Amino acid sequence: MIASKWRPHIALLIVNALYGASYSIAKIPLSGYITPGVFILIRVSVSLLLFALLVFSLIKTRFKIDRSDILRLALCGLFGVSINQICFFEGLSRTTEMNASLLMILTPILILIIAIIAKEEHFTLQKIFGVFLGCIGALIILFNKGFQYSLNQSGIIGDMFIFVNAISYSIYLVIVKKLMHKYEPLKVIMYVFLFGLIPVIFYAFPKLAETSFSTFSLKVWLSIAFVVFFVTFTVYLLNIYAISKSDSSLAGTYIYLQPIFAAFFTYIFAHKNLYFYHVIAALFIFTGVYFVSLKSNISTSSIKS
Image (tube, rainbow, N blue to C red):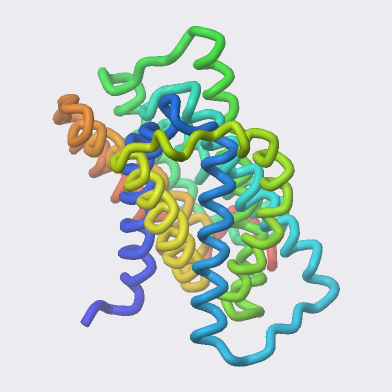
């Protein structure tokens, strides 16, 4: 039996393994078959349907939202679904898998800053040290063969999209935590996707008629199915569980593993080599995650939630 304190860690490990795989797999439909907007529309609408089926089959209690929480729920949809996914796919279609995964490691730092400003979390010495170790692991990857920065205009725009994606996702992780504790997490995520779908429809609809679905190969359909079911539906389920059982900064720190997983799956799908520095980087990252997850009575700021 797995100890309850380790279950959020296992959930976050699976989440970031799936995210790491998505950098390579999501590239397949984006390589001339489908526009980022239409891909996002399929991803969000099908995932919303899956969440709705799960909610109505498992949860029978009535879901009533306080008026004071409607704005927060709408903002979760905006930052956690609309901006997050639009920027991710627009960025991934323009930059490399490694660039995208490496830029996402900014998320834990952004989460700590946003959480402190929003008075959602304590800022402890252990968290500072954990983020520092995670940064060292990320920099080991950054300054080795696995990172090739795009100097062309398209690459820079793509990297900027990924950076905005990281900011948006960080805001989501911070503001959704209160809703997860107050309401049924599954119902929260269903409404987050419902609110998030509205801007996506306006963004993607003009390109929908131009998409030739009949030209999609089995590989393209399987890639889309993987992104929808595993990288969206499964990932969001595991994320809401982990966030409800731990600090949002812990969820953010696990993002440091994405470059490791991205490099591994790039090797699997593109037959690129893995290097010893990936192992060293992983050791720093896991140690950083350990320190971020520690509880302490000593904090650098006595901010109360």
